[in-house]
Amino acid sequence: MQGGLREAARRPDRGDVSITTVIIWVAAVTGAVLVAGTIAVVIAKYNARLNGL
Image (tube, rainbow, N blue to C red; front, side, top):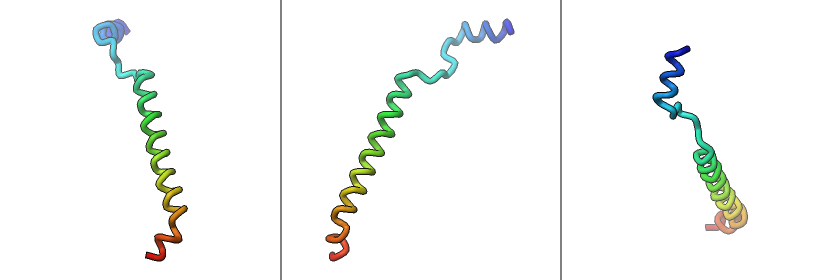
């Protein structure tokens, strides 16, 4: 137990995920979903015209 406490005191960054990292990941995933959704809507809207090419 003492060894673990000394190690934690020596290296305070134990790999915990910060709130900033979570915000960045959520923003990236949201952006990707929005782009994919936009592409799907455009393809659905112009699907009939694309079939005629």
